[in-house]
Length: 237
Length: 199
Length: 199
Image (cartoon, rainbow over all chains, first blue to last red; front, side, top):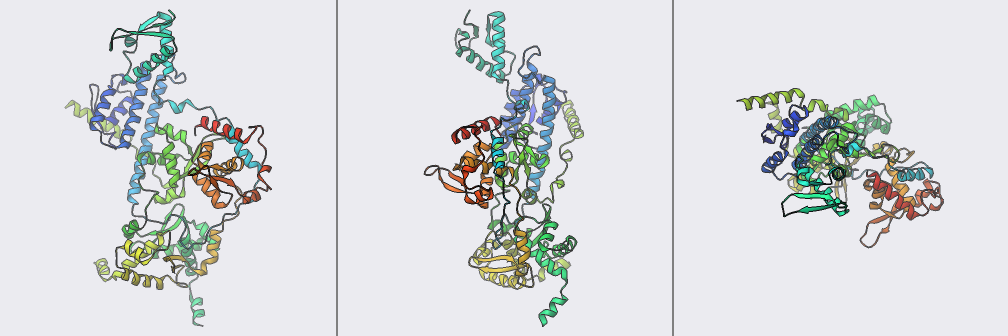
């Protein structure tokens, strides 16, 4: 077990090692909405040693949790960008992927132990000092196979599958559409209230969307003083 | 005359064994029984007999050269007792400093190969480009064609991987399900924690 | 008890000899007495004694492995009686085709050369180091100067390449006019597609 898996957590909703939390979430025995991810991050930062590998593993796991939580927070009637993936599917996929990741992490652990056990096994890499030099004659080739190889490299790649990018945060475009819809209905809104229930990462992405709309001249923004509420209204209105 | 007499007395397997010694000492990688038989122009069964003879001669404690069965064939390596001297002589760029990311990528390629970078990235949840490039550079994995025309390049573990990890073949890798903690184990830990919290 | 008895009886030079056997079987080049002594952490004179022991053991007629003294020091080689078998091992049968990686790399160099490794890597979407090294070793491509002073080495197809592919010159390569009007256009198109392929 690695340092991340054993990270001791003491949250309002859960007490125990990190990997147990993941397991409970994936088994739906713990409601992810109740889990304070910021607290997990703080705990990790307190316990953190200078180990990039551990940091990387932690980021992967927390990103997975954030993704799952973010999906759960978007009401289903909203037009989500994950058209082909409802939250249940996402949870299922994430659970499956985390389980698979765990298996390969175990495989990596076995390889690491094996390497350690074999550390006193030395052999020569490459040719022997006085060995005859090998020759690798090649049969006559057709020039057409070169053209075929280059054509294949110039061919349009297959359409990328969305499955590779499901670990990303909600895209800015989601909030662009969402804010435009709200303005069509109401003409103006208070940004702080609109994003109040979202996580920090989602709020950050939402704020980027706000700046984007402002830059495009679609909206006007007002704020009475620093740290006061941000009011947004249709610039055409 | 005496020399001719000696030759007549010589066990024919001895001569084959010497030929195999010669082949193994110059080979850049492990040689299969078939490869040895083809090079020696002899029967695979007799090659097997000769290898048995050599295995008892080139073994730990008896010789500084050890015959090992690895990577689908046979190869000479240094005796383990000489490891410290060997360490002073050569670096081991292939196995030195494999990162956790590299080991995870290697495990995925070894178990699932041929497998492409996007597939590896999907399992690990992060891009695998530099880990894959590093493993190719080390010679532990190698390209194995593309998924389809114009598709992603796929990778597989090399014989060098098997040799470095001391495996006779990929089938010697343990089943992942046996390595990963089972649901039963998780259940037990869950109950343990629940018990602690209750107390 | 018997084992301990054996160990006490062991000639200390025997152990050094085993260490030297181990060093010689993993060495990528001949080793001098000084190099052997440094790795074994022993006296050069004792190393000389051990080498004498090994020379009588690993000699023609007695072993398939022969200890040879060359300019740079000592190395194992194959016995002469096994020369034919070794030649059969080294002389690979004529290869019918190239690997996908080699073919793609060769096509890029033939059509777009002189071209550097980074350019090849950009078009293929993967590092080209081992494919380029393999083609250089086969003599199908060769270095053709640098991009600019201190820049990357560029490669071009060789006369051997033309012979193997039955061409009298690169202008006889099958035309790819439908892909692009010029070499520059072809290069741009390949890089652009590779960028979108991303792997």
